[in-house]
Image (cartoon, rainbow, N blue to C red; front, top):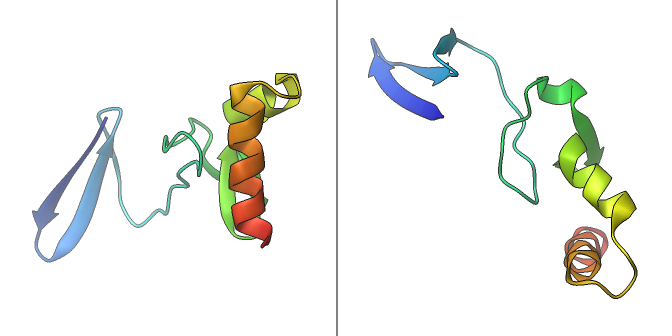
Length: 80
């Protein structure tokens, strides 16, 4: 859960009840979640970040399935 609050003109984020000050956390392009290990828990394509969980779903999706079609749509949007 991410909660933002304004303190002395700086934005502080509370992530899993721990304050994270001055850090940029990636957000998955597909599921819009912040991965536990931050930048080390996924990969980037053309500036868009995909978390490890979505990466595994991509690799396991069968050709023609709705998940596979969703990934094709996202990747085509990135590349073209």
